[in-house]
Length: 340
Ligand code: FAD
Ligand code: EPU
Image (cartoon, rainbow, N blue to C red; front, side, top):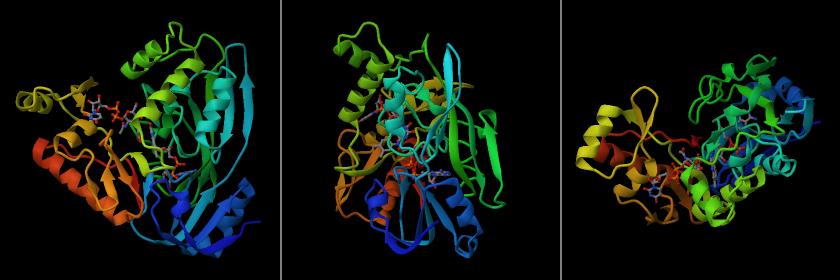
């Protein structure tokens, strides 16, 4: 039986720690709760926002509508053989504890994605990625409810249309499809370990590890992240605010003539990915603070709320950063964070 609350403060529900109110708020604990909700008049008459851990959104105003807070829990074994196993994970399970569970069992595939905040259900939404791995590499399918028709649907990996911080759920299905579970396959032996990312190599070396394991890679990733990224329980933030932009090779070459030290990584089709952190730092933003809104001192791609910044203040800082990067480098930054 669902219970709808009124006038709820969303500050505890978003890692930026932004104060904003929701007209209505409901927590879902079972798939039946979701079915009950979509029959309700309130659901039919109000706009809604699906909320997981609130670690990838910026609330710029009160939410005039219904916030649907996801608490669906449970991990089910779908199939298993000598080499690997497939799990169906309810979307409200918290991501990092799920990774820890898999690492403890020596199940491989998501150890590089350790310590990413949020829920399992939001992970395919932007195809979470870190240290050389993206969740799309282990996803079998994503299942949920089409909120416009009330029917359930399952998407194969291909149908999810995963890209860099993208999927069909972040594009045309945004806000229209409630992800209720994610099915993933993990290796039980002959793990494909990914230690290519420079920081992982160096950290493993510093840890005197010559034969990395699922556990040691997870430990290394956790150590790197703790060093580099602000902990939202101490300083409000939503991770990288922008995506790393992808530009054409000729554009990159012309920038390299003016800025010989500009970093860039060649990806497919003559396209180069440039670290947004570098562009932002070159524009002089690193460590800057305006009231309680700021640019993190160690990672300028992360915008922070030191205490009482409003969503509008963070948004306005982000747009000023975007304009300066556009003017200096002719590169448009796209927010990774969902602006509400
Ligand atoms: P929310 O913020 O609650 O929601 C994000 C979006 O997904 C919203 O549009 C929401 O409506 C939608 N959504 C949520 N749940 C569902 C659902 N069940 N069905 C349909 N739509 C849904 N991300 C990375 O990719 N890599 C990183 O390394 C990384 N590092 C981070 C570090 C920090 C310190 C922080 C704060 C964030 C980081 N992030 C990173 C971003 C964030 O953690 C991920 O995007 C995460 O998957 C968001 O999960 P969430 O449950 O908090 O989503
Ligand atoms: N850099 C600077 N100045 C800095 C920091 C970084 O110039 O102060 C430059 C350097 O050239 C550095 C490069 O930026 O080599 C990349 O920095 P980093 O390794 O910290 O990674 P990132 O590109 O900033 C991305 C993801 C992170 C993910 C890490 C690790 C995006 C938008 N961000 O950050 O994801 O954890 O790589 O894989 O792709 C997130 O999405 O929220 C997120 C945190």
